[in-house]
Length: 89
Image (cartoon, rainbow, N blue to C red; front, side):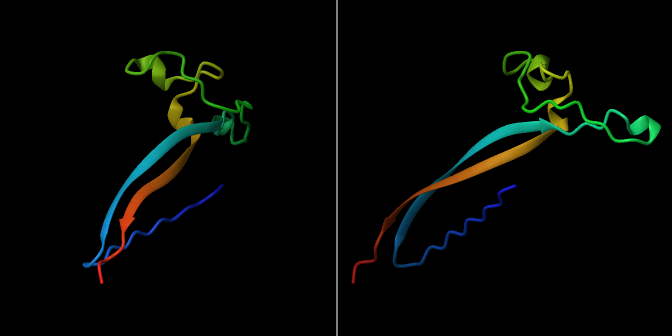
């Protein structure tokens, strides 16, 4: 799993303008189907695919395995786009 940390610092004499773009994607299913018998077994679903369009309840259910989206590993990629104007000396 990749972890990224972005730190933006702005000084008083410089002008910075930035915006963050976040892309959220859901990876493999991590639901333990054998938890009720004390075991561990996952279904092997490799990626979340919504079974409905955005805004419906089907958008939260995986078409491949039938699990809720929360059982799938969440991957967030954050891209910071910024403009920098150097201070006038």
